[in-house]
Amino acid sequence: QVQLMESGGGVVQPGGSLTLSCAGSGSAFDAYVMGWYRQAPGKQRELVATITGGGTTNFAESVKGRFTISRDSAKNTVTLQLNSLKPEDTAVYYCNAYRPFPARNYWGQGTQVTVSS
Image (cartoon, one colour):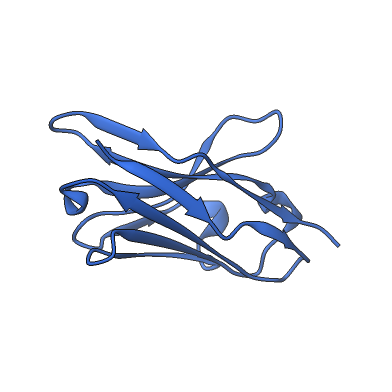
């Protein structure tokens, strides 16, 4: 069992930055692909970025070059750095932990990011 807790959301002006953190509890944290997803009002939840236990990253095209993702295995944390924020980045951001074998998929409660002038 893995429990995830996000923090760091808030309101920021266009062009600004935010740092989202996700703290995980549970065993075998390194075995999970950690990710951030987001869901805007009236839209489906979408992938933002993922990072494997080995550090391989993947980003949605819409955030490439603006967001970075990192993980600290010693602290069981995953961080999403959001730079050059745009109004269309406004959404609830969710932390995710996934492993295929055995199949496990966990979500945090979400944190709101609002980009507005």
